[in-house]
Length: 528
Image (cartoon, rainbow, N blue to C red; front, side, top):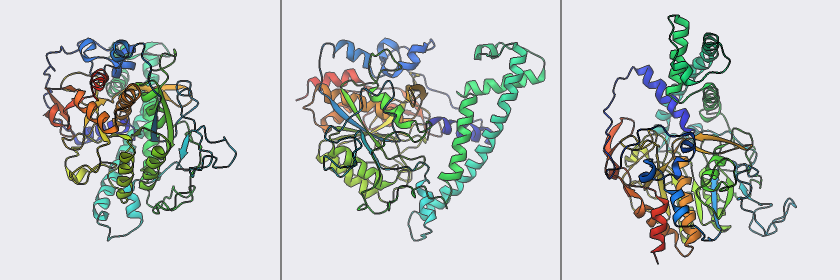
């Protein structure tokens, strides 16, 4: 789910509860670096994740500094990065030059030319076939009506809470959608112009009640990063949530034609890795963060050059199936990926063992998995908040050392630099990376800001790809270790969680650090 949806939910629920629990935000500096006191420029807003903390006072990853000072005139090796996600617009102007092609497969001849078990898998594989909408996992558990399932009671409680909150929030969002055009018309009439900006609205002074209320409405939108289109998108998303994600008698798997609970039933899907509709944009955004073509004069630069993106469509509009994820990881490994990005997650996983086995298989083949920590502001060390996929059970020993879990940073350096939605945990989150308001590719040659740990993971995967490109002898385990050890240590307290608690940054991930490409490459150069 998009971060914007959770922002609207939190905002409306907070308003409905009349909460006044405002905490004092700590503002300690990190290593005496001054806080940024000026607004980011438009260009900095689009590139902040690549900027440098010391030079720009923004908690970026020093990507530009790495290219300018460490990688200049150097040639790296091609690295295949698999993106297990929704469909990817492989024809996008900023991605078409970095898409992996299976040279051993003849396009569209209906044959499995390379004998890998997949027919016409030219740029990857689509495990969802023609399906799109899906239930959430706990709804699927309830739909089976198996009360002996140990997760059934918890699933029932989560369903009731989620359903009631979604109904209420949808009603609130629908009201905002109805109010917006009325407020816009009043503002336009008052200002005497068709288009207006936030500054125009701020300057309005009027005793007219309708104008004052319309100004207040628009300032509410501006302050929460909303606009008319985002409200409409949210209304659609909440409708989908009720009609598909939370509907017990909905079966989105029918078009696929397999049994999703039989890991042996693996001959399904097709080679079409593109989105089924324009709004299926998540995978395209993630791919651009990793590897959008650098310095081509178009929308955005990816973190890594020398990358080929292997597109694997396995994440629907709802919760992914464990079987799809397990088989997707194995497909990526068997077809040459050295890094796998997994920007998705859920809190129930009835067949988690299939995914654990796939993670261990990837480890045995020296493949690094970079995973999004999740967007619910949870402390994942609380075992009641287990997120899947992960690399351990109940805070126990890691099943393999090739799995890197990433939390999200915002572009405000200081006490508020952890994105408000990001999960965290000393045991279950490894590092933090830029993930809020990240500008990247969208279907049909468009670009947009999106936020989530889904954006922090590919930023980190891009750094891993740089390391495996320029230092190809490094193992997956070494790459993970270097990313964690080379990050910038943060000594300040930061605000995290639903309760807005101030915690030392060192206590919210196992490394206590934020990813830094420059430092990682320096340490990589010194590692045997």
